[in-house]
Length: 367
Image (cartoon, rainbow, N blue to C red):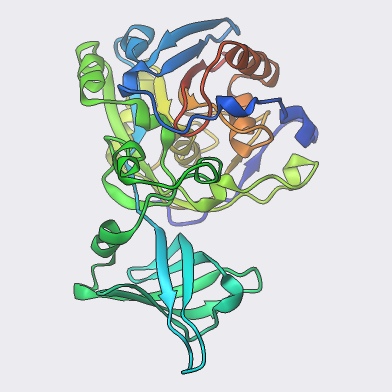
């Protein structure tokens, strides 16, 4: 397994500005709930030549080819949105209600977290989350990020979080409504196995067992990779020259079996169809300059912008992304900036729904 952090930012173009990736998005295009059923979501097909066709996700088997290799992300979202109480420090004080989101796992019982009100929390404070779940603040950075050591029954923190935590909805949804029980199902893909993400790999939300059976019937093969999505996926780009942006790091894995399956597919001239920007990032992190795909298990902060030399993905299925975001930069790198600006304008004019619970697009990479 590869055991070094992938830190490369690969681009062959001159510095691009943040304004190159801006567009106007009406507020009512942000989806607050997913389509029901999942496969009824709309699917914008952008061909390699730039032609745009309108479909639904249920049409996916007809849009792919027999022999295509479908790659999905099997990371599972941990319900890391928590409510806690910081007990009064003395008899004259008051309890403090705390709302926090865990953002990065540091160990089996240790996480980094963002909390409100962070100014009321100090190193040494104990937070009561449930009868059998507490956390102690063991460090506090100048940025306000806390390090929490958890204490729970049987030291099974994942089970404790599943019992009391809420789904960490993206800020653009959480600002409009709280997470509820329905989100526990809606904000998890059918591929979810390996717990570790604090945001869903949202392109996978469109898949159902019935759709997967239809893809198998078409002769489309399926393999899975892992990339644990971090809270950094929502961080805005704050520099005008996008190549000065520092990409967040996330842990991922491409197994030897999947690496071999991709090599075999490529050797036979078959396409690799990647579901989601997270799966694409880990696959391209595992690719050597020669085009060979190696097993990989490490952190990656690969930043994909126009000019990137793709080695693995031939087709990308992904949701619609925020203006000026690193994810919109990625799809522009994949299909072309002018093509994606035109395609997004079509999607907005045609009423497509955006972001995590929104519709999808199927992008073919120009040859």
